[in-house]
Structures are given as C-alpha cells and as structure tokens.
Length: 86
View 1 (cartoon, rainbow, N blue to C red):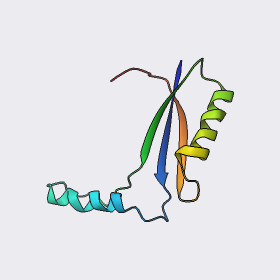
View 2: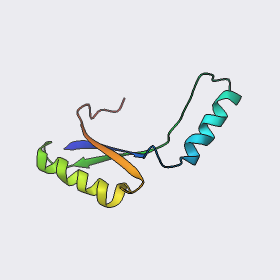
View 3: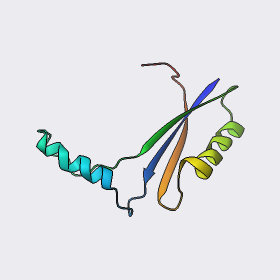
View 4: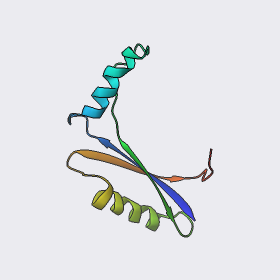
C-alpha cells in the first residue's frame, strides 16, 4: 500500500478569504510578524501496491478531476514515504 499526499492551494491571484481571516486573527492572539496566510486543503490517498509512475499519474488525474479546481487552484502530488502516524 502506498500513500499519496495531494496539497491544494489557491492560486496567488485568487482572493483567499479564509487565509485573510486567519491573518487578521493572529495579532489579536499575540502572534506578531506574520505577513501573509494562505489556506489550502490536504488529501491523503492510500492506493494498493507500491509507488510507481502509473499510480502517481492516476492520483494526479484524481487531483485535477475532483480534488482541485485548476482554474483557481494549483496542486502538488507526492508519495508519502513515512506512512506512519506521527
């Protein structure tokens, strides 16, 4: 079994209201010096078998088809080598 991690983030030119809300809350909570926050999504997908290029391409197709909106978001897909809890 192989775990792939798909990280999805809004493109820089797209407004990120959640990130702006977090950015505004941090100073009120005593955290100073943060100049920007962008909020995204993380998916962990477990696939039967060992990591290979074919499975990586399949997870990329999943990301482009369902997990991300390529018009306003970009994504990265990586194989998670640790596969442990912690």
